[in-house]
Length: 257
Image (cartoon, rainbow, N blue to C red; front, side, top):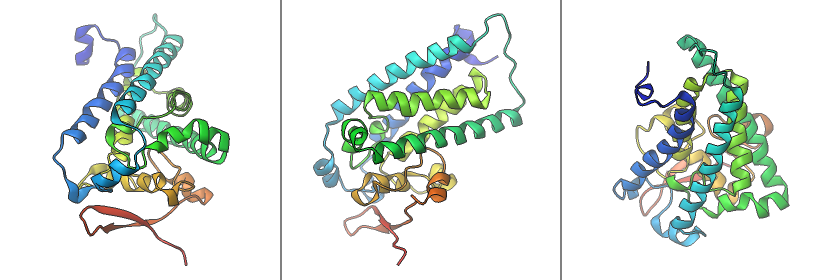
């Protein structure tokens, strides 16, 4: 028994709306933090000058994507659930294995779709460029995409991760909530000491920040967990974190020669 069942909330409903709630809670925590200029990847002046879309538009775009995401999730759960069959949770080690499979499936799907949206000039110009209007990323902008990209990259990728991993709706609650937190963290624009995501993953805030810069748009396509495909297929751009003179950090590419 889990607490949400006491309120008549199914695992399917929780799996649909918990990640959405976590997006705004976790993103809100970042936005409520004090200035922390000494940990920023970019100065506030850069954010004001380089970003090409106001936050109000970003929030509206994210809400639209989350609405579409919820519709698809509820539809998928309704098609795959069996009301007359009691779903049994697998042992913890099995669930961990399912989560790892789901992470690899999501990474694989997002890498190739994301990379193709950069290679195909039409798709980049009319669809993926919307996400790159945030040259200086911040937490609430993690899911700011064209609605078609949000559907194809995140929602369809999430559905494949769920179906191919064999996880139950209850396990998916934890997986998709964690994936949402990871995505928000990758776009937070802060390099905070002791951040567990930075300690556990090489694909992190600085790694993805490189991709959002002009010199990195053809590199570091991997998201949201590992950088395996970048390294295998030669699109990995190594970088060094350096202190800026005005405070904060800068991810500078490391040249091979």
